[in-house]
Image (cartoon, rainbow, N blue to C red; front, side, top):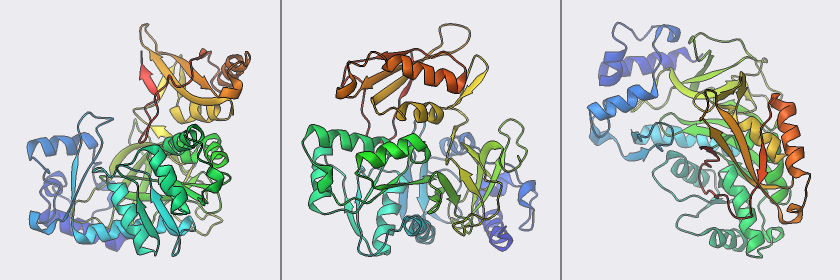
Amino acid sequence: MPVARLCELLAAVLRDNPFYSAKLSGATPDSPLASLPFTLKQELIEDQQAHPPYGSNLTYSLDRYTRFCQTSATTTGTPMRWLDTPESWDWMITNWTRVYQAAGVGAGDRVFFAFSFGPFLGFWVGFEAAARVGCLAIPGGGMRSAARLRTIVETSATVLCCTPTYAIRLAEVAAEENIDLAAAKVRTLIVAGEPGGSVPATRRHISELWRGARVVDHHGMTEIGPVSYGCPKNPGVLHVIDESYIAEVIDPLTGQPVPRGVTGELVLTNLGRLGSPLLRYRTSDIVRAAPEDRCECGASGLALIGGILGRTDDMLVVRGVNVYPSAVENILRSFDAVSEYRVKIQNHRTLPELSVQVEARLAHIHDSTLTHRLEAALTNAFALRIPVSLVPQGSLPRFEMKARRWVTD
């Protein structure tokens, strides 16, 4: 554990950060991390509501901050605003360069960013980091999908950054618009924003759509920063950037640490974002840490098997069975016949029930066995009967950003 950097962080926030000096009353710069309380997202939201517009988690005066970002409001209904100093921003760009290095991306690559470039942190940091490592950074904001595809082909982009869902959607649009992806030069896709990059069937599906391109996962959060990079040796494993974060995995119910190899909630302390830090932040991300201290790629520190497995607020208990969206996705994407899907949650009875709607690919729309095969695969995985129905092509929504495939009926 980088004790010296933690002491430096604690000294700064205890002295100058109103949010943490009040929260950590009685702590000292030498206090062990485990003795400090967790930081919860709801605390941060309430703090920003009490001290608008940015809250009190600011270590310096406002004139020191030069960057503004904002979270989505998909899980809480309330976005959080986040400010960064030049020093904190530089720290985050350095973290993103690790993502590129692990993905084999560097000088001479042409990186296309298929994002709207809204106020989310990842777009901007990833873009600037690409330029830092010597890439040609190509923004794709303000474009429709077909225009993005043509730009990818015409600029000979070698790397595509987007969500897993949008990588699939772009390939679908390419087929609709008669844009031959064989003409594209994309050899690597760096995907983030949802778990698909570490879901084996989804990763394989994206790679096949993009003519064998490598699919690399990454995750981060606007409020915590860029956290992890895809293992260059083991697809589906995320490495926490250990020189930048102190990572813990806890039982989400008790708050106690869990052994390596046991599923739990990821807790993070960022060490280089002194202007707007987070200490022992409960991310709500469900992970499973590898039992080994060192990966065959040479990385040490926390390795997350399967990436982000889900979120504490996403997991459903259906007739006593824990069901994570990523596990359902892995099953559905393992069928080449599935073009798109949606999971409906019915709460009309005492216990929640699930059903799945599926769009079949054109070549499979008359396959009378598809729904039965999907239902059998879901039953084998979860020991639950989950009804599957076919819906007309084009009837399910498509997404550019994070997909919302799970809906309440």
